[in-house]
Length: 152
Image 1 (tube, one colour):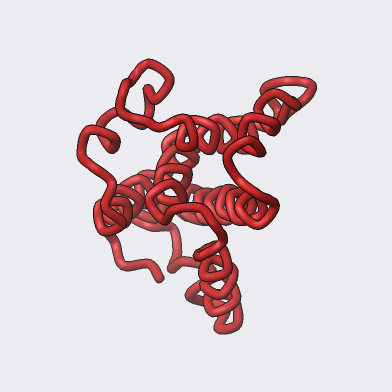
Image 2: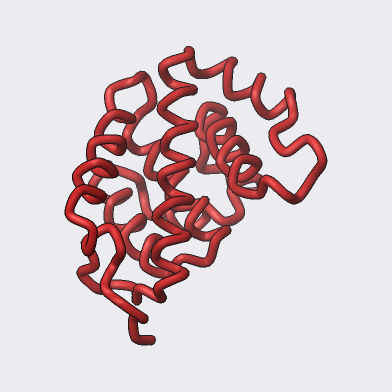
């Protein structure tokens, strides 16, 4: 696969630093980096973003995510490797990524499960990470950024 164009965030000089600052703001808000990385990876899998899945696996490994979790994140409900906290974050990521799949896109039971594990700062960080992931996915899928390519 060949990219249709250079990554738009790299073409518009003000875009990339703004996105990076937003991403940085999600850190140190009570959500382990490993959980944020799992959320990013799961959203990227759902959206079919090969660039973000490839990058997400590498980034998750750097954050200390075990291979067992990386191999099973697409089937996290059935896999024994995930904590209740990670499961709540992954459920929120799936619901917020698949907004059009149901009438109540993010039902109270999914939100409440996440709220049982994360305070408002943590929920804010998760929500921002999910949104940033979807932004990255939409940019990279639309412009066909290939996995492993330096786009940023």
